[in-house]
Length: 277
Ligand code: NAD
Image (spheres, protein in one colour):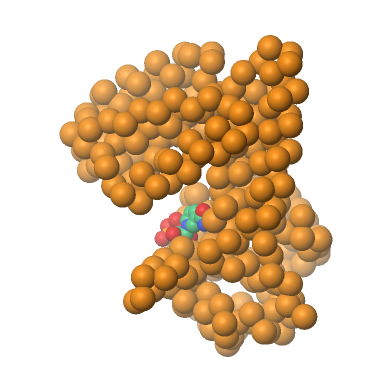
């Protein structure tokens, strides 16, 4: 029987735990807030930003919303980040990507204080050497999905497809921290199906709709699908051809309702952690 890993349910559990923690902290007079900055009016970004605000309201932390016009300059955005860095009432700063072409996203990410963001190079360094620090939300969410679904990682061969800074690389480091044996596959990897067939846990962040077929799957493997796309009928789908692959797995994440909801839950987790420090 294939276990369908329920990201909606697990993310709800996490949000409920956080809500309790925040209520406890409020009794001690502590408050937390996340600042969310959006530049321009990309409709997908607006949906993400709204979901983040809703999650903040649910767990009981404040959300400060900055909706800046498309023509905002890099200097203006950096000045806002600087102001929020210095504001002790702000625990987390999220700049919604993508940013307009006139703004260098790397420069902005580096400008955010490391204790208020997961992408800062200082936090990436801490992850490499196994020190506590903010971890990129999507990979951290995948670890929670696996743990809370009772899936063991220790000693397992985990193949991760994708080496992006926000998903593939931090995912590999977190899996290593869980004592998995890790292989990272990428666009120059040879014999991808054969390699994937050696995976006990296959994490797919390739960014190509329904790319992974049953030919990539070892019978009984666990498959985590990070991709989010719209198919030709405008329905959400992942990087994995779910209907074909699921029967060959012992556990799999659906799209939607798998990895997606975890990202916001982990963002909330990071804000609460920072509140506790
Ligand atoms: P990306 O485009 O930055 O990275 C894709 C990776 O796939 C690259 O490292 C590349 O080397 C690798 N790749 C491309 N073609 C390949 C091939 N033929 N064989 C092997 N490897 C190949 O994407 P990303 O930002 O890491 O995101 C990956 C997917 O996850 C996207 O679909 C994105 O929308 C989704 N995503 C979802 C969430 C979420 O919350 N669920 C969060 C972030 C990203």
